[in-house]
Length: 242
Ligand SMILES: Nc1ncnc2c1ncn2[C@@H]1O[C@H](COP(=O)(O)OP(=O)(O)OP(=O)(O)O)[C@@H](O)[C@H]1O
Ligand SMILES: [Mg+2]
Image (cartoon, protein in one colour):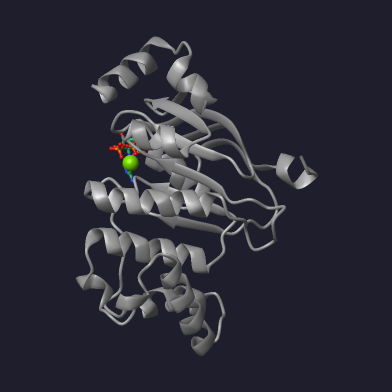
């Protein structure tokens, strides 16, 4: 393993996030290494989205320590993608333009990214009129075009039908197998939340189970599904699998 692979992308120590009286994250300590595919699981309100937002810098920790390695580029996807009222191609191009690309170059790169997600034929269509699955693929193309080192996804397939879910999952796997802008020695790191344990099995290399803002289990995917678990996590897995 090269030195680049062994570097932690993020090192969190006892990070706490409070919203009034709610402890959305409670002393979370974790380290994520470049190239990992981490699934966040747990009941509603357990802190998954908050953790993703902290990782992205969208939410501030009220306590604890947080260190990020170098100048990693991040992209984030949500359950319902935000689309501007313009073509799919412009939706992708705008993200690049905002990062300093020339408009003409941004449009060309956007088309290539849409091709990668199989949407080149609808590049000119108003993105707001696309189906949920297509919009999520545009969002993935938008993330892809930015060549991020870290991809954060908050329940990216939760509102999709089984067919669209499979398509987006395949693209996530493809994305996770690629590398960041810095080259092949810098694999993409993926952190996603999901209530779909089948998806977690298919995509994750590591599973973090959360409860009331705390990390209760943090295991390689095989151990999470086959080894002994803390009681709460075991019941959760059993419940979700029925
Ligand atoms: N902006 C906010 N203001 C107030 N409370 C918040 C805010 N964001 C999250 N919370 C609270 O923090 C806790 C954790 O919420 P979070 O959204 O992180 O959970 P989650 O695990 O993503 O849940 P779900 O599975 O429903 O998406 C919840 O009790 C939630 O109500
Ligand atoms: Mg959430």
